[in-house]
Amino acid sequence: MFKLLNFTNDDILDVFPRIKNLGASSFGEDTDLFGDTLAEVIEDAPQGRRLPFKLQTIKELKTLLACNDAEIDRATLVLISISPTADVEEPPNWGSFPSLRAFWSAVLHAFEKDPEVQAGREIDPNT
Image (cartoon, rainbow, N blue to C red; front, side, top):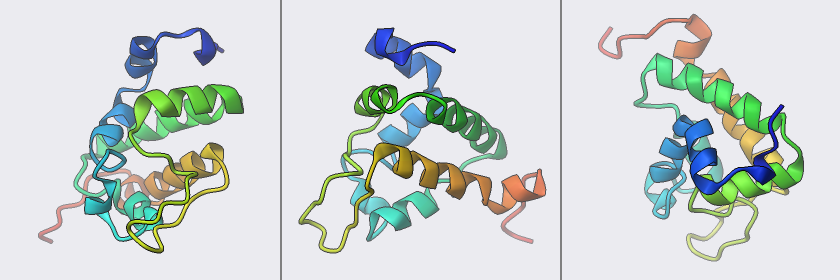
């Protein structure tokens, strides 16, 4: 297992390209555009993404969650623009997580329970 604490920011971005993509969209600076609460944003994160992206994201999240808390903290600072553990005032009732491990575990759960991931194939929304 590698030590993320020894990685440069660019190294971390290279190891987690799908999570980085989430940091540029769902978990970016304007994360409230993706939901009214942080839990809603997490639940909606898999939507609109293709199955290979979802499966690769699950793999990256499992790799991240295998790290210790200090490494998860370091990687999170590089990968996303929000602080999931902070109590924010705007928007009201946004919500927060007790730890970054809890946050990333919730993200992993959202991707794992996605209907396409569960089915093991892409589902045409028009059918």
